[in-house]
Length: 218
Ligand SMILES: [Zn+2]
Image (cartoon, rainbow, N blue to C red):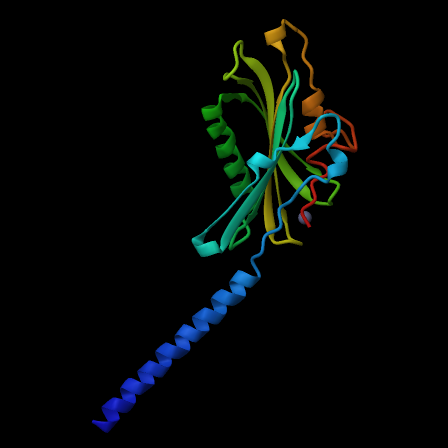
């Protein structure tokens, strides 16, 4: 009887020890998983661009172990545009192909909001941003079908991993380039240019104040 009681006690101690170890591991993991949203510094938000505070979002899954948050910037006027920077803190860093796939999925989902891209116009490439990161991007031509008449848009998704902060970044930009509603037949890429320009003009527009080019992630 004595021996059996001892065995039971031992088991109890093992269980208690396990619970403590698990609690410590969870505490350590949680404390190291604070997420800081990548953002565009205010100095680059000029000529009508501002953050859309209503679309500031954050969430966490897997009991808080996988977190994300996003900031959205926009410009109104005749050639409106939206630019979203989403920051993810996955348990395991995603590889670039997974990130691009996630971005592609997001763009296809945008059809629910009327942004329909022409998949035949997809282009892809890479560049180095002002923050030093090498990125991968894809672009599309498309239409905003939520408007009458439809207006033409250009769409970009650009992704990178930020080793310094342990985060993955996905940027999505959508810019309207036509104003058929006011019978303007020429294309105006000013909002698109603000989203994609960089010092080298990789996407066709040279400028040091591009929104993606100046994202701060660490
Ligand atoms: Zn970074």
